[in-house]
Image (cartoon, rainbow, N blue to C red; front, side, top):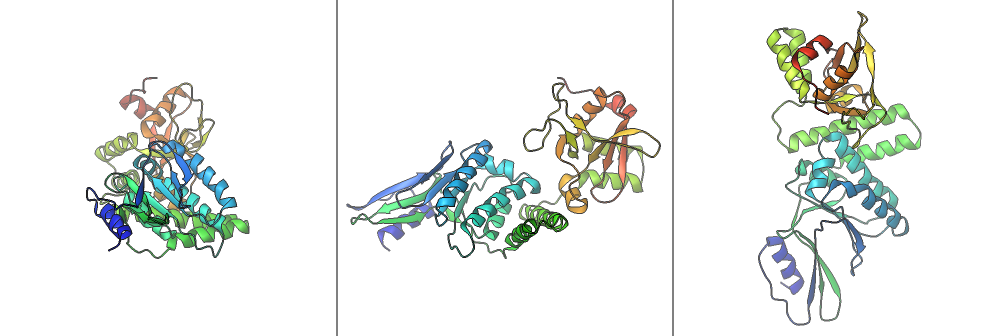
Length: 355
């Protein structure tokens, strides 16, 4: 085993130390708290989004600009725990993240053999699903090493630079179905076929959602609120309805909002936030706020008819401050059934959030 193989294997096996022979020099690149985008002496680009979720757009923008002039450059991306926790929190977020990286491949153009590498924090939410899906985009996937090292440059006595990726490579094979969805979406956008694009987006969302569920070995239902709507519709009882109300208050639901939106569509309700929430009129003439249960399955089954999110208890607050609002109509993600929560019921069970 030569010195380069030895150094690479030691980092990969996470042992403690190595004595570098005279004439050799080793430079180790590690994860940073701050975002970074720079070229190493070997020519590889390190793109670290930092330790918070807020830097994704700025780092990607830098990468887009750089690749316009350097389409064959190899990039090592670093996605830390906080970034993945946010951008892979559900299928909507993860779709947006992966679509950005598909865009990176598009900049390079067809026939370009440049293959990026991404380091993904194994402890992050839905990390395994993220690793699966990045593999489907043709990107090599690693977990960082024991001491958060990601990449090593080894300079031999002749000043030749050799590189070694550290950590553990994620080697499970995938069939590239996600890449196929994204390419089909590109085609629909190119010919401006809105109906086809919407159909592909729903299929993509369903595929990503299924991957998250499978990779996470989640045994519980992904439609808890809609399940309770079905249960109430098929077997009404005061107990079943109370279970639905409890689940609603702690659920993130979809709404169609006008006005202020925060954090990629999430609305935080305060008196200063004057966002309007779309309402509907029931057959008996009552004005109800329109709410969509279990947002990812709803969008998969019926299309995304909402543009923002709120917690159920925050929707109750909107009812409180709008005297003409007579309640909430919650649409199921599983059928055309809906469940009404009347204003009287809300006033009897809930105290508004303190402002």
